[in-house]
Image (cartoon, one colour):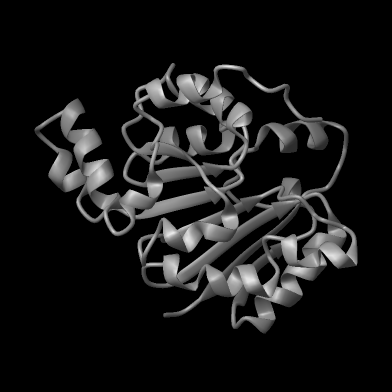
Amino acid sequence: MRLRNVQNAIEILEKSPYYIKTPINMIGKWDKVFQNALLKETEENWFATYFNAPIHLEIGCGKGKFLIEMAKKHPNICFVGMEYQKSVLVRAIQKVEQENLPNIRFICWNASLVKEVFDHEISVLYLNFSDPWPKKRHAKRRLTHPDFINGYETIFKDTKTIIQKTDNLNLFIYSLESLSKCGYTLEKISLDLEQENIENIKTEYEEKFTNLGCKINYVKAVKQK
């Protein structure tokens, strides 16, 4: 179910300090984005806390629950949420503005153009409940299609780490095959994340469907530099 369009979505987004209006201008500069954000909060410990801190990216962050909770739990990690739908991203912005989180920012951007925004800056990429695009003719739109996976190569800083969660078993099997073909080691796989001893902050979607008894598939895939 999609959210209704928010008529003043652009205005709401651009007024927020958590929103990066022109992310393409930030390529190669994301460490400074977060250093400057923290400097406004406290001038005492910003250098030690955020200098060269890892940056994690979620593509398709939706209404932001997962990333906001991650930012609260891991203050020494910086987080960027990417969402293509402005009306959805507004909900994330409205949530984060109730917090004090200098280590999180959001952008409205297309996943196919991610390498135009990040250049060897990302430590971990999250793909949470991406659209499965179930028809074969739409396979190239899947965020774990080899074209996408190979396109992520230049966004990673050192070791490449992709973490995926999905309730769609067909997409999951497809993703495992694609990641393996692209040289990733499948470090951790689960067909029922609820039963695993893995740190897991749930998305809005995940919370709803686990309550209905749906099993969540999980993979952590790693590729050395």
